[in-house]
Image 1 (cartoon, rainbow, N blue to C red):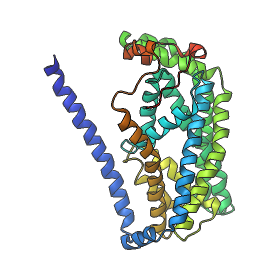
Image 2: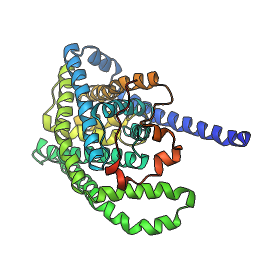
Image 3: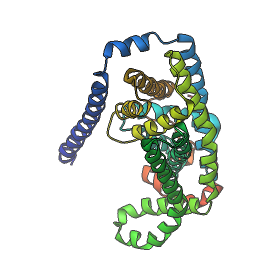
Image 4: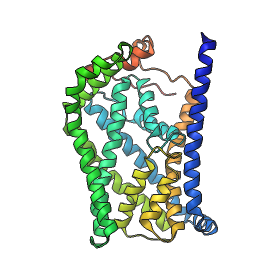
Length: 357
């Protein structure tokens, strides 16, 4: 039987490596096209950056990462899964680490939800929480970027007008989907279960229970979105400091608009960790000189990688089999642990803080 499974598994591995290589190629090709502007000028720009300002940005980046984990903790608490602060900070850094090697900036979210499931929270609820965390952040940024793009030129530029309207549409659409979507999903619950094979029904029921829990608390998404606003101001300030480190300045409103589009472009699953599309978005929004825009994109990508390095070290020290939270959890089979419990009863779950590794 193992021999019969060997070929499909090998094929899947080859396919996975092929997709990863293709995404890396897309990112490299986009950056190479942008670097055709003047690679020497780009190198001199980055090499001449102010090291003191870069150190300040690195320090702020760790605090910013911690606040991101607090937003995730807020969402988990709203879904009934209370978790300690520091373990979620740990998992957030690990998510950044794995996201460095996965498609787009959101690639590490699935890994983060999986690692959380190894610590006592059902996988379906973890996946829902990281999705809400990601969407709430993008929605808040879109609400900021739309008026910033309009005000950057007083609404006189057609490009800024179209961009602002596009961001407003994205923000309004995602907000409506997050608030109304779970309620509409309840109408499809029975047909979906009827069409789902029996072996996959426990997973679907668990996911539907998690969505139902979220639908009963519509203010949770709005709270997470409002919580995201000061986080974005901190990030915009960090990027502004990066520009100062590169001995350049950009109008804060235009920078906010540029960061919005660069973040959306980096979230597309078409490149390696968002590299390439993010730099292209910065070039399109910040304009000339292109070398400065590429440098900003590369440095913001480097910040994400540096945020994940502590998580990567912790993951390597912990080993390939993280310890589970609670003896009863270890006794369960993986399908039962990840999918078998109803998140509707999550308020009664007892959260156990993992022991230090």
